[in-house]
Length: 218
Image (cartoon, rainbow, N blue to C red):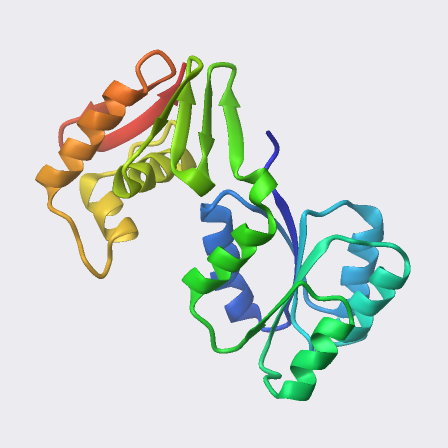
């Protein structure tokens, strides 16, 4: 299955880069533009699964852009991500056709939850002929056998898949996944051991001492 595609309109470069990094880590494909005219052109050139629009941007503001798209029959799910947080702004955002409205500053995890909620049909990813994962339900299907994984085991699996065929050290995995509440290396090893059992026949997790772990699809 192809990655879900997001058109991201944001003129703050630093903010855009941090959001894009997280979205791509979560296996979204992101097309970033920094003004409304470029966004309008992208909308007509490509199909997207979600629009993530700032409002105060050059050329065409987010409200006007989305309203124009809706008037032309575009029903793509859209979320406004903006510092405009008064009630009249919220009303204008939804009246222009938004499906959701998030005020800056915001929690990145909240943004991810809201994005996923707009694309539940895309939660399942077919990774190979015999292996797929469902992010929404922390579920894997290996050789037609479905298993629901513990949340942290699933986190490790998704992380390794994002670095497919590349070794990641135990420290990298722990620091990237659990920066605020790190797990022990022994706990990580337990998760890896369980994943190896669940993935048998579909993928292999390889380990080299003092180097790390990598996943290889079969």
